Amino acid sequence: MTCGKGGDGRPDGTWVAHIDGVGHGTFYDYVAYFPDGHVTRTADPWARAAGVNGRRSMVVDLRQTDPEGWDGDRSPNVPASELVVWETHVGDFSNDEHSGVPADHRGTYLAFTHNDTSVDSEGDFPTCMAYLRRLGVTAVQLMPIFDFGSVDETARGERRGYNWGYDPVNYNVPEGSYSTDPYDGAVRIRECKRMIQSLHANGFKVIMDVVYNHMYSADNWLERMVPGYFCRRYAGGVLSNGSGCGSDMASERAMMRKYIVDSVAYWAEEYHIDGFRFDLMGLIDVETMNAVRVRLDELPGGAAKIIYGEPWAADMTAVGPDVVLAGKRGLSRLDPRIGFFSDDTRDSIRGNIFHHHKPGYVSGAAVEFAPSVRKAVDGWRGTEVEVASVGQIVQYVSAHDDLTLWDKLCMAMRSVAFGHVGDLGGGALGGGALGGTLPDSGVWSADSGPSDAEYDADPSLSGDIMEANRMAAGLVLTSAGVPFMLSGEEFARTKHGCDNSYDRSAALNQLDWRRARRLRGLVEYYAALIRLRKANPAYFGGPRIVPQRDDSVVVFRVGGDCVTVNPTRQIAWQNVSVLRASHDWGQFAPVDDSAWQCVFSSRGVAACGEANWESYSRGHERQIAIPPRSFCVWRCE
Image 1: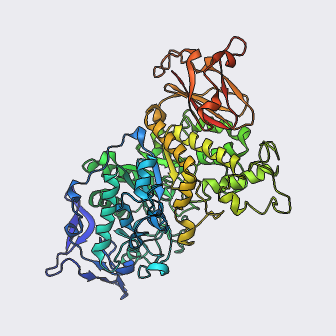
Image 2 (image 1 turned 30 degrees about the vertical axis):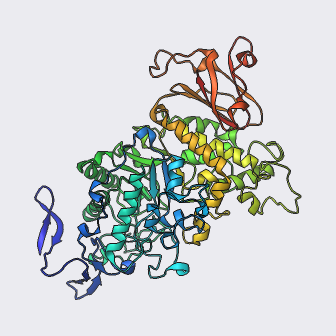
């Protein structure tokens, strides 16, 4: 056994052993002997392959796991201005029996290799990969695909368990429950690579959700090898629990930092991963995050690798005063090419995640949140949360955590309809915030929660909710920064009010492809918004003119476009003279005040009226007439 060395030739804290006669497919353990006489058996924390349930490590010749054409696999060239991220779970993607994916591949890596599936294989509405191509997103973020501990890989078919996977066991090994054979450690690797290869071939970057902040158990392979080192503890040995999972990993320690950096680089090199989303990044120290960025930059094409994460934690964690964590207070210390989710944007648009019935800007609290939405669309520039680059900001209104956007809108707008919260009052939305006529109080109560019909987007009940959904999507997809969405947001995905479905049934979590077909109008609206964003690079990071207004309407100019959002029930007016750029705004072309025309509207362009400026004139000023309950884009043409 020899001491491992880094690129500079100096010892790097690892040990390397070469053993003759041990080859591909050999399973092995370590037995660790300690000075006090204690003996521990453990799997290899650095293992790159493992057997069923990850309990034994496996020697692997990685060349034997490469699918045909792997050497030619390349990441799609997606400009930053066209990056639109769609988050999904390997199982959710194809578990639905109506997905058109063959039964033996549903819920697996190989589902992503079927390029032309449709609902019930009838050919009238695409699913899975064919659907993604039609939608137009450019990156797929995969919830954890490393080996995790909460699902028994031996259970197949109807016995198969379900979990999101935020409980790592082997960081450098793909999860076996998504493979067709969890017993052969090479199969999961090959099939994971085939999934990534197919996503690349279809034009999508692949972003991997990584969970280096905690592990499945404090009795993990790292702690078995070096007890008391890899997990954070308070004085007296009490485990730190800032993750809510009981085993915060000590990223600030040299060997844990090295482990994280090496692991990320391994996935980037061996699996051709294009980006990494760091779960609870607020528990990882800034120095480690910046070291990850440096290491990726050293790889061929590594500067294009994407990094972003959650700048928060579930609770306090046990670190010394000299450790700066990558939470909100540490954002200014991060490399400007490390991004973060903006919960400020999320909560402003949809409402607070911890109070399900509290509305946001689009759902009944427009007066309260209009000022913050005006900041959000400009990437929070010039505010107390401004960062080095708007490209660091991930703009979103739904992710796997918390209520889906649709469920949140259902709950919040019910409360508005009953006059319990919001600035619109009981019937001020017109027939109640849920559209139509409010049923008898014997059917509805303020505390009962939305009905199944509301969650299921019954057209007779969901008109106002659909309007709110469209406004929310419009705001995210025209804001500065990187737009992000939970898979299925674009067809009003529901979990019937469950806000934490991490270990619920596959049926509750899976994408409902028949719902997507039924709500194809909303899907097409999202697709049109994505096309609009791709065609206008200024949406990503260009400056905005954001006029201040006395009402709750949000208006801003970006590039050659004027975006308007009117959450009220009345027509609003915007004086177009304030949209002219002064000489300080070199990125704005001069415009003719009389030339603004509606080119995109959540209510249809016809709702904006004909381009008859005489009807929009008020006094001596030209005005844009903004339809009620609308998201619109105007352009000088």
